[in-house]
Image (tube, rainbow, N blue to C red; front, side):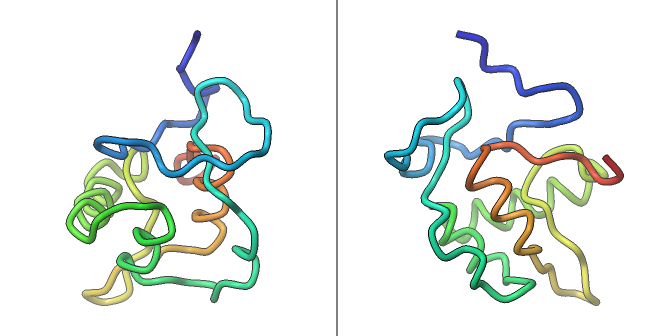
Length: 107
């Protein structure tokens, strides 16, 4: 089974077990979590809130947020920086939860 994400997308390292899978069919190699109600989330979430939705510990979520920043958006948990605070866009959570991958910035 090929677990390489499509061109222009990167699998987010989730260290350890993948998130709880939904009962919906999914593409090969793309772990998914339930997306029910994600469209009702606020436009931006804290790293801790996003991590909780994705089944990540607080420490792992922040490590992935920092990885996103230092890799210029190529890896990690998609975030924007507001001053000293990271925020995770709802759209990034929905994409990660439904596909298991995110597109680098600008793609």
